[in-house]
Length: 305
Image 1 (spheres, rainbow, N blue to C red):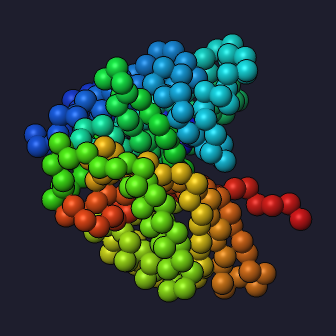
Image 2: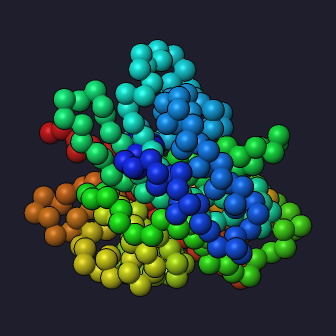
């Protein structure tokens, strides 16, 4: 969850003008969502992780611990921490996108977490990733929260950038959401089948956007299809996955999914297997074809033998 939304050590990274700059072409709905994200980060610094999550998460919001669970249900029977600020968590959005209907979006950015109860507090760096949906009352709430850890702090630009635009359906176009969710789940299964039969590199080359992001533990985000293909080409493994859930915007041009995955390292002597969970954001390009624009995975701890 947002422990990989981990804390940006210097709080001015959230409060300074550098963190607020964004493209003048950013859609109004995306700007509103991003400002809500920044309010969320500030609120976390005031009241702590749990209280701020309860405030900004939807009732059905999913986090990964490491399996997917509904956050509010998972913590409702746990006592509140005696010192809500003992665990320091900050983050800031630097990239995101919004559906044409203005009802669903996502964002991501660097994060740092510090356990101040430790004798030697050590920063844990990462990148958060969240999907947001506009609620019936007009407020934005997180519906899925995922992240990954990195081995070092992010040192790139802090200026927010919206994802490249594509020819979308008009915002007034309302699709059959149930049918589109089914289409997205079927696409996930076809993607997995391609990864198994054609190989991960070819499958990703066919199914991801030119501007896709790959978030893997231990790595800074890998940006762009070419960089992703080059990274995957250096590995030797097979991967399959099973989607559990998908949802789409009212305009049918942005959606997300999550599920479980299994990775087999083909060059390992014992055929090492990694299992875990993944989440993806999908965007319909040119109003026709779904392409994955963000892929994040979180492995389960190794099984005891």
